Length: 285
Length: 296
Image (cartoon, rainbow over all chains, first blue to last red; front, top):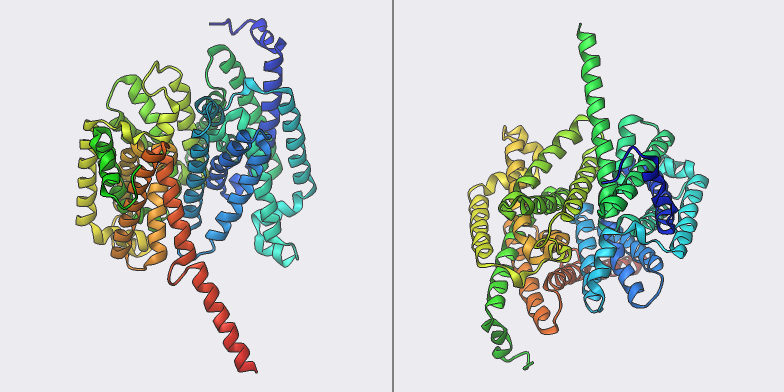
């Protein structure tokens, strides 16, 4: 067990290239996830985010088998799935949540079948599923920076439109905005975010990085820009703690990061509840 | 491989005990999931199922580490999480959707981290996530039989109440029925189905068995009793065919079964008699032609 009060404990891993790269990639992912997560929480898109996290899987596998960059395959699969879900959900008989559940499981099954054909399947599968922040290669880091940066740029440029369609789609339509197109754009940005986050926290826990920090932010504030800032901050903090924990304890990095974020969420939740009780009691007196 | 019409093609794999047990398990799980899935689809509990299956994962890992019954531990964990979601979603105004998201990611991450401490057994992540129906034990098979019997009994006894609660919760509440009790029963059934189907198609894909056959049946009929039987029929077709294909082509059975249920759902979307894409297309075209004729 390392000495947690010694500064050297924190500096030593940073001298390693793989830790530097992993930490940097994870921080970028945490910030982008914080910003996009704010939209996810405000609009109640947690299930869609979760489904997209699973549904990009076949795309990643096909790209992996064809020796292409997995990010490209993932983005294509994510966009195909979103379009499919919205088409099926137009059927009056099928709820959107049912459509989401069917789509992502079937897509995932397809990915698993394709992967079972390949020889190095099992290891690649678990890497894709739970991610490994300490296996980020330099070219992955560049891609993460470019894609993450462009997601943030698009959100900044279209901020007013995206907020408007999130809170009041009817008003947005009345203003002559193309709501369907903006929605599609938001979902595409979500797909990009998820694909970028794949490597750090893995397929099954992407949604956690989207939802948990933003939900914590939601407990702290109601307006969107501070919510994004809180979410990015909490995500980054969990990421840093998670990377150190997984470095020293040899624990799956995705799990460590998400557990840390959840601890912060419950801490804030309990604190808020206690404060409300305290205020209520002082009023009663 | 013999011809597809030769009975020996289908009987030959059945001489292996693992295949007999696997087939029996698939049949039982298909019936259970289609039955419970019908209510899940009608009541819109898909996301709750998603949360529960994540909680089950943590439950399985924890009970493995503590050395208890895997299924028992999983069941308790799933029910506790379902209860917490209801409580927190309502209290802090963060919305049920977000509360579900937080809980399932938290419990899943807990499972993944705890998995590091397991030396063997469940430490094979791929088996937990994708299932292995051909490795089912005789004890688990008997447990599955018991669960299916219990589910059929519960649905049979309380059919009217469950239907009312799934179709019109507001009316049920107005009639003085306790929503909490009946919704609670649905959640228990859901947890039972998820836990049992765990072994067949794995944690990641279990939702497909619940949703796909029931949703396909929903496209084909409007009567609830028909919907249940059609869903069971579709689930059996996908399950048994999938198992055989997986055996012949040496594929993992769980994903094969799920992919087949997805194909059936897709066919339903295209060709359903009243609602299918093809049918509506022809109807629209005919209407357009008629109106053109009238205009001319």
